[in-house]
Length: 504
Image: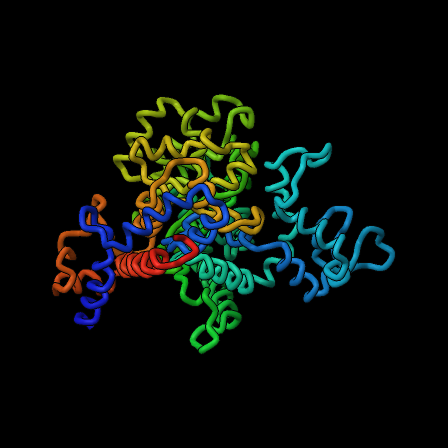
């Protein structure tokens, strides 16, 4: 086994763009990229095939395209309210004006297109009743959420296949299994002020059955997905090759007792089930309850970190912009997520320039290696934050690690390739910098294992890839093995691109 691991290490490391001695195919690919970066069609083909390490900010519910949601609603015999543009949790009742069976809607092009627009950002244009991209984006979830519980496995299969076809190796999907049971436990156990230790002890008898339920739901989701993808058969879909892990997502707009119950169960789930590699908190950050309870929620994370020091956090923070909230709300969210809650990664971080002493915060994040998950498309659609006004370059200049991610690719009607194309169109990124962004996805993933990379160099023991020490390092090291797979994918990509007439 060690000999095989050493061979795999050698095969991948021979292709590493180490610095002064890059292979000729890598140099040729870099030249080609510089020549085609302003040619949209060829750039799209190039970036589609470009190896992408990971998508670390991906909500499973928001990753699904509206066409699939409508198809499942039709299969289930659900009813659609045409006036509310919403899938209803029942069959249609006789005489209900404005309702139509989903199977009828999907056979009517005009009706289906109207639903697709309602379930996503496609063709969005402000109206008197639907006046902002922010509101339309977040309202979309409630329009189709009733179809989701019966199709979680189908959703996972679609998300993995999209990732596989987009040349992504690893995804961390945000999900909330057993959420109802967690909320019920929270309702039975009101918070005793801010005594979080007492609150956690009060929930202790609830946590075991809730976590078991969450694991069973996840088991069923994965089994269904693998069946759809035909994994372990000659007809296996591309999604079978994608490694999937999960972040438990807590809903920040609920009452404090419910939020704490979700967090306590989420921490326990991440502590006991290796498929759950961390915890997050979601929903609109500008919601009145989210704003009111932001500091309280950060202290909840702080308290639970002491009980579960092995659980990692990637927190939505700074998904805000001037005018969306009062100025004081722009001053501390990212800092609190890092310094109080102890986040290892930040999702969005869009309002960093409006934080108190942003230069100091950026230096702190760079020192701590707190990575920022950059979501260019959703920041445009939700916050009207686009182009050079986005803080992506600010983070990079400060030395804060970044990686591109999709957020809600079904609602945005995009994918990770689209995020890379947006980045290239806005900033003068080199091919080498694109590779670093791709590598960062795996370096800062919460998948277990030590990184193959240290200070932009291969770790010392693998500088001699044929060594027993390097093989030992790879043994049982899932992170490093995925990083090696990415390097081999880069080598294959560069060999193909450097010889492809389309790019000459």
